[in-house]
Every structure is written in C-alpha cells, then in structure tokens.
Length: 168
Image 1 (cartoon, helix red, strand yellow):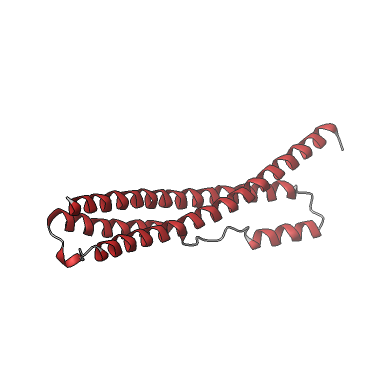
Image 2 (cartoon, rainbow, N blue to C red; image 1 turned 90 degrees about the horizontal axis):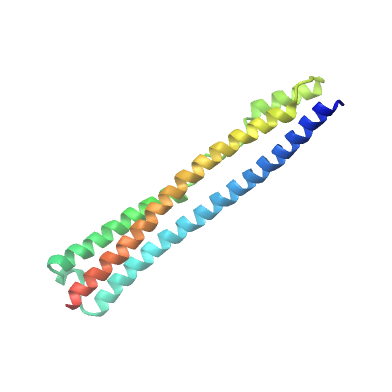
C-alpha cells in the first residue's frame, strides 16, 4: 500500500471512530432528554396536586375562590397542562434511527462479489447521516423539554401569586 493510501485509510479510521463515538453520545443524550421530560411531567402533576391539596386543607376549595385568586389558580392549572404537553412531546419516542437495510444488503453483496469500492467510506457516510438525523431529533426534543421547564417555572410563580393573594 502506498503511503498516501495508508494515510487516507488511517484518517478514515480515525474519523469513523469519532463518528461512532458521537453516535453513542447522541443516543445517551436522547435517553437523558427523555428522562428529564418524564421528570418534568411528574413535577407538574406533583406541584398542581400539592397546590390544590394545600388549598383544600386550608379551607379554600376552588369553588370559594374569587377574583384574581381564582384567575391565577385557573391560569396555573392551564399552564401546567401546557407544560405537560410540551414534556410529553419531548418524551414521545421518535423514529428509530437506523441504517437503510437495502443499502447494507447491497454493500454486503458488493463485498461478497469482490467489488473494489471503499465500503468503509460508504459506511462512514451512512453513520454521518445517522448522526445528523439524531442530532436534529435531539435538538427538537430538548427544545420541547426547555419549553416545559419554562412552563413549570411559570406554574410555580402563578401558584405563589395565587397563594399570596389568598393570604392577603
């Protein structure tokens, strides 16, 4: 093998190793986003349940609330539902990223027939495509999770305002 071809092969292997590592990181990031989204759903339900339970224990059930307090209480529940919706969008599974089986079958056939194409480069190209698609999905899921987190913060603020107005 000539030095130029050997150098190209080493560079291809290094890039392939890096892309493979990035694919693993992308998969781990997706799992992390999914678990955070589920935690946001739980936090929204817990916060809303806690707020209404405390209100009921303090003798201020929903039907007795008036004015701003009732408005903030209803707004908090609606914002919580919206936040849960964003978290659900983030947690829902997206299309599984995988190489096209037809492409893999044709590469295998070419290898078996002794074709001289550089299959490593084609596999690397497919992995880069999977990485790009995975990153797009992860970015979309993370965006929805951030929206849910902002919603959760808004719910907490609205419920605190409702509690302060009720107490004042």
